[in-house]
Image (tube, rainbow, N blue to C red; front, side, top):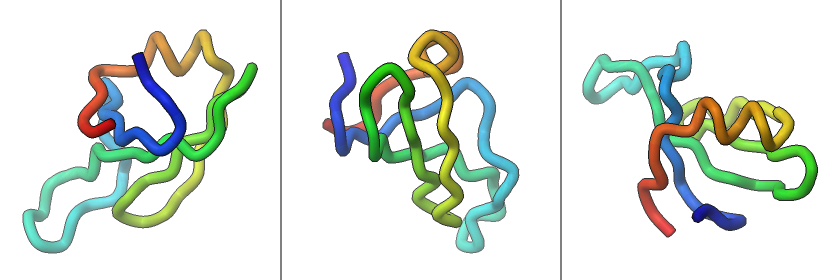
Length: 65
């Protein structure tokens, strides 16, 4: 379904805005997999760590593998 290095989209966008479009950023890269999952915003490099259950609940779709 998803793997290390994949780019995903979450249900809620991140608070940072993309300068070229002015829209909220919603592209995250998975940088750690395990019991906890760590994702990094590709726009501002903010890192969020959450447990796998919460991640799967908040995941919208996998963009790139």
